[in-house]
Image (cartoon, rainbow, N blue to C red; front, top):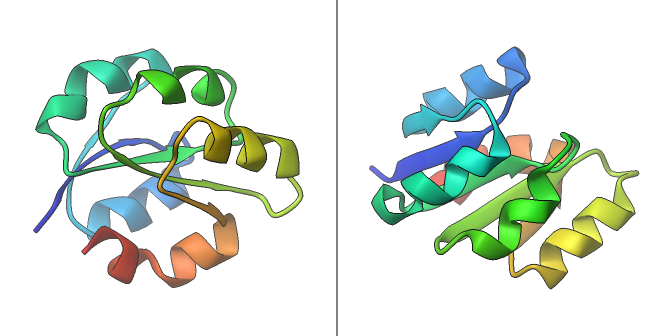
Length: 100
């Protein structure tokens, strides 16, 4: 099972991510970089403030999701090197596959 570090503040979303694997949640985006070395996968919710700004500092496989209308944030995440950037609905429909 992959070890997952995640910045997913929404409690409903968090419960779905937690069910998919061994997960550690951080309370702010700036805390992600410190835990990256111990993570197989980093998951981030792009709709929250400050996430896009830290993506370039993450040295791990990053999977990001956002509302399908958040095109700017999704494009910025791709430019910052996120391995996968998905609309929220696609991420949660494929969560088991993505985090396996």
